[in-house]
Length: 159
Image (cartoon, rainbow, N blue to C red; front, side, top):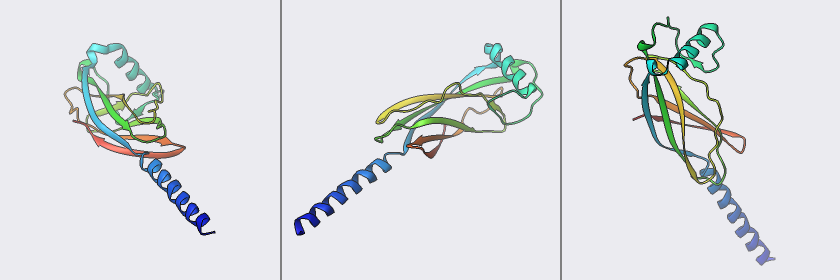
């Protein structure tokens, strides 16, 4: 009977240790947030499409502020690339990058896919923001993701 009790305690500690390790590994680590800038005049098709959808109310991204659109030379696209690491045993799914808007931010373009990050891996995912030309490229991002159906989020500031 005493041997059975010792085995049950050992098994309980072993399972508890595994569950603690699995849960602590659900936290995503943001390795870096970098920005690249492209003036809207270099991508007029995307600018015109974005402007048209915002004005028509059919824009599926996030609109931060109303603006009277002028020529594309007054705007720029800032692409934020978030490099992240999943140190856990489970994949991180439905990753969404949300940009905390600055004063010059107009809109965050919609994502065409919902990426996942496999267990014990690293990845880079990007999002693009339309801002006024010459605006600061440093943004704070909040990355929301799901592990086994539970939502988690982490916030980081760009370089």
